[in-house]
Image (tube, rainbow, N blue to C red):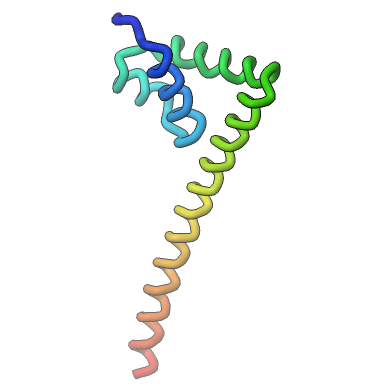
Length: 93
């Protein structure tokens, strides 16, 4: 396997934490083993324990992931309600 640049490692870790990408999908995309990516994520989390700036960044990434999940759920609920409203509007006519 080819060497991965440090900025690519950071991006891969970010994709896993912030966007919830699976290790296997990242491994396939970047040509790195899942164990290697897992080690990078573990090392980043350990770094966050000793570095306040890194910890803040980790918390922000986790919050972004949570908000994206909530947004997706709300969009699904909104779509369902629109369909239900259209259905009941037909029933009234």
